[in-house]
View 1 (tube, rainbow, N blue to C red):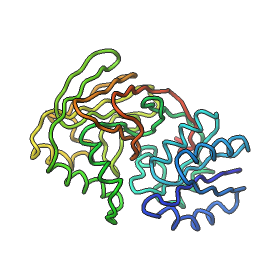
View 2: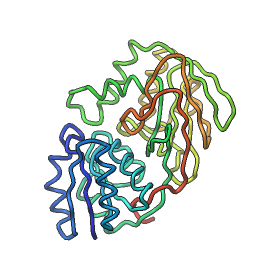
View 3: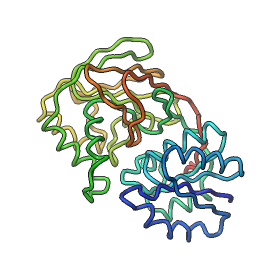
Amino acid sequence: MRLQLVVNPSAGGGRSTKLLPTVRAALSGHDLVVSPTSSLAHADSLVAEAVSDDRVVVAMGGDGLVGRVAGAVADTGGTMGVVPGGRGNDFCRAAGIPLDVAGACQLLTTGSPQPIDLGYANGVAFIGIASIGFDSEVQERALVSKLPLGNQIYLWCSLTTVASWQHATFTGTLDGEPFDTRGWNVAVSNSGRYGGGMRLAPSASMSDGRLDVVMVSDASKLRFLSALPKLFKGTHIGEPAFSLRAATAVHLDADRPFRVFADGDPIASLPCDITVRKAAVQVILPTE
């Protein structure tokens, strides 16, 4: 195979860089070009270069890089694969891609290209979950944290954010129908997973052409904390504070400013329009 590995060398606190020799060895039988990124914008140009050279683009980094590469590959009509190199690797968890790099590299030859949906927040592509509110503040903390906690950093930041949290009022529309809710969070899900394995929208599908919208309403801090462990099993749905609806177009706003985070990165500001593009990008996934 003709492959171009687009790698974020700083992903996972340098995890991608440490794993790169293993990946090179696992892919030694292929025509491989390794391209470190200097920024997400740089990844766009690397993708264009790879697709024009008839190469499969292999994203190696965190979910932010995966989402960015997916959007660029969708725009250029190429095919991509993923090798986990970040802390959360939630797309790999949702898509069934092995979390060990040797297994993920093997999948590039044993898997098959399959179409998956992408979400778009104010025109910027994402592959996982776009959210505002409590999630925004958790992600702000995670971005600057130096704690060596791996994917547990999101749980730690969630726990530390609860203490200072003040409820917000979220407004918007779901397929044109207005909503108004006060509480913790509104999240718009494509893959359904985030935060290092949390199954926020356990029934979400990346091939149904729709978005699962999870709202967390006015609940006490104690009740909210008691529900957090259930997120990893997806058993929080049914709790009084959690509601789940489906839509293809979502408009979001709030009574105070939040950055819209998706795939671990800030990708938009409020107000925000979120849409879904069905079968937007071809990704090498396990063959069913």
